[in-house]
Length: 522
Image (cartoon, rainbow, N blue to C red):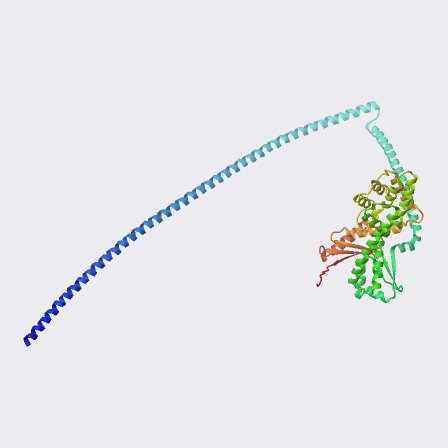
């Protein structure tokens, strides 16, 4: 039993040993396989690394070649540009050298020419000196010959010539003296007539006052305060808008409107009468009434012009000329109403033309329009002759009318019987006793000149001569004139008035600059 057990144990040990050695052999074989696989993988990795290294070397070589190519291309480009710039610089240098050589040659040529001219001048100077010497010699010979022939010395001959020159000069001086004596007599006569006219017209004081002021009757004196307004706002608005001098004194229930412009006074009178009747006296209402009255006056002027044309039997006259005829009612010349003078001339010219065998209707038409320019002289610069001819040409009036406008003041010769009739009628109307007043006209001309000086300045909207011509109110455009420029504008106007207008005393220049913003709430 024991033997069997030992045999079994030995067999088991032997089997275990065999299994152990078998397992060990298998394990060693597995290790060898893994080792071989690892070596194989290592070789593969090594091979791949060599391939990558070769590729890297190739890429490095290619990059090196590419960089080299780019460098060489850039080098060639820069070399080419350098060569080009070098050529350009060389070309410029050659051009400058050529220019310098050309200028130098020109300077040398000029220098040579100047040298030649200088030599020529020296030669001419020598010739002149020689000619002067010959001239003096000839003069001496001539003097000697004259002395021998005339039997007089040089000094005696000089005295004779001087005496003759003195006699001639004396005759000329006498002629000049006689001429200026005649002129002095004529001027003295004119001056004497002027002095006599000044003396005689002193009796026309009341007449002038009628021509320069309008009075407005008030229901009560309380309205004077309302017309003046708080801090004088209403009266300032009236004077600035209407262009007249509003005089409020102690005369009961009366205010006075003063202006040389009849039309402004008439409009101002109507505006204040409307304001008094309305009762609402304030700046806004004053402007509203003024626009309304101005429109009514324009319509009234047209209607009066149409009535005049109808009464005289004149046809086919432009509406603007008809309106200007109506406006002549508010224009005076030498104290004579322009419309009254125009109607007189029209009637007289028609009669004279008819008696002389001319066209009565054409003479009436020419007489009616001969002073039409006087309706424009308050608004535009220039003489009434030029303004009238221009407006009649614009509206295609007859050539006889144009000729009459120019001829009645001697600007042209009368070319027809009708034109001559107008000239004669104009003289008759102006020359009749009591028709005109020189003093008033001189005052009106002075105030008109003052206004024209102000309105001729840039940036001036309106200008009104007020206070009997002793003050001018200038309304400036606030968008064109600032505060500082308004001061300069006042000085310029005052200076030009001093230079161009003759007047007694002082003239005050007021420049008003106002900014007004208007909008509507709807």
